[in-house]
Length: 143
Image (cartoon, rainbow, N blue to C red; front, side, top):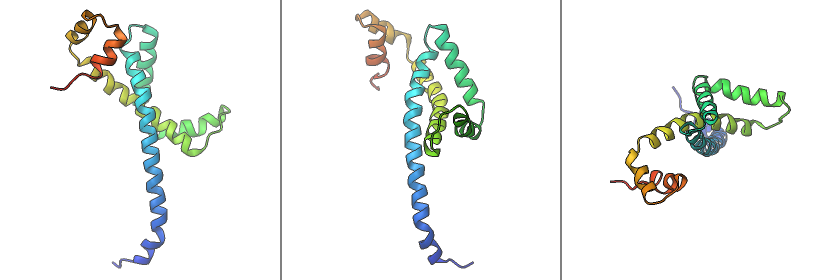
């Protein structure tokens, strides 16, 4: 087999462009997934049955379908509904919403793994539920 360096030098700019596009898509969809995933986790552990049902249905539906189908649904489905978006935005939305379902379950499991006594101690100090979640549960010191 011959290694053709001229072919590599000719194709390298295209490969580099694809690499940068992939990094951008990954970073953008990760941010979208983390933000919506945290929201989904909080909805799933909520005492409000409507929020809980919405998050359960969303998480199970998204985790149960292939990501490629979700990408195609966003890319072809949104324009059919009148939302014209470019292909990179559609990819970020689809991958971000897919990532949110998985991140939501990870966040939920992490929050539920905190001992019950942590919340009780925070409430005994006079913290509200949201203060306890923000200052004690999320920022629990390691060790």
